[in-house]
Length: 309
Image (tube, rainbow, N blue to C red):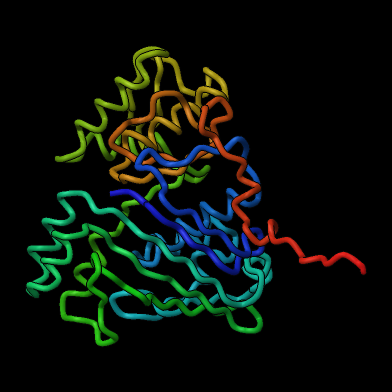
């Protein structure tokens, strides 16, 4: 699965953005800018709309509210979020309405899951003809920015457009898009994730891939220390002994190999990302790196001027 198109409207740092024909390998930017951060925020919010826990985590990560202050309304999908102070949320938007549209090219496994889930022949034919999923997420804030309403519209599977009356399999379908995107951030505990993946039934192979990717710096392993948080060792020395740059490197590799997401955003990239994932981030040396400040199309608008006669 990968993103082929993104359209964003209404963010403070990205009033309007349209990126089409995004390659399966992702996008590289020459530098982190307010526009690239807003672009990443938009993608993260769109995917979080399918997962209540991810959405609450995102609100906390953005600094809009503490987890215990957030109230959630909605069955199946979140319809409304509220909190006590809208100051930080108000700085994220240009006005009170944000629209985020994504088009996903689906992988074979997801298409097979959808075909098992959806009984209508016309939908299955649409997926066989064009294996894509698209939807627009609209967010509308109250005047005090303490309440935000979320709504999904324009949902399409291939060229089949979902009717206003959602079919019985709709909410089961939305679960297929949970945790397909991961954004590397400072709240991500690499050691805890490594221990969880290593001990899981289906994740040990990902843990081995992570170890192999880190082998350029030495032997890495995760250890559990009594009742404290797990820690990472490189050549039997605690990770912090190797400096902040090493911590950053391992955070990038963990997002690529430990996480099960097919689409990853990491502000700082290392060479040779996994070919089976779509990776976004900052890579000044990449030959196709683009200027992130140009994501905002509105800034490029030119006022028409007529010569004096």
